View (cartoon, rainbow, N blue to C red):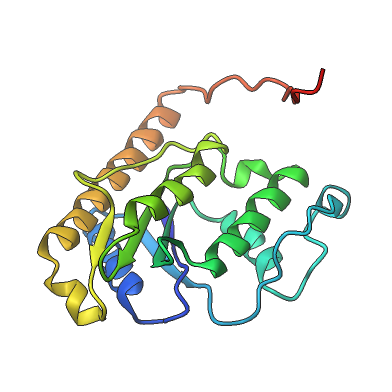
Length: 212
């Protein structure tokens, strides 16, 4: 079992990383592997809505890491997306990136990379905007049939620096609780698979609009 911890912050070792690192340590204690994926500071082209990913099997833009990430993500059993708060919402880099990741994965027929795998979101902020950020990131899971894992409070940490975040004792404790809950879910899924419990029946997708 291995979890991908996605650091959507442009700061490699900043506040969001510090929270993800605490999760990684706890997952290891629970016997679950993890890896922190750094989004970096390169330019990310937003989704064009062109639909070419359905024809090409990947995003038409091939130089911002999205296609490589989709390939890489296939090897993981769960995902935790972390973002700093920018203007009371998730940072622009992570939303541009994940919009294309999820659209291209499903339009290209590769939805099983994420479907039924657990997901969680965490947010870091100096002061406010965390719940709006979590709500924004959780929508990726909700539209993808991914069970959402929680802690005992909203998955957030506070501070302007990594050292500040370490002093947020409640926030860091919740990262550990989240990690343990995540590990428990993965172990339950593994046990279910060994017991022959099947994944939910899949129906053909029906799409409608509201034009009459």
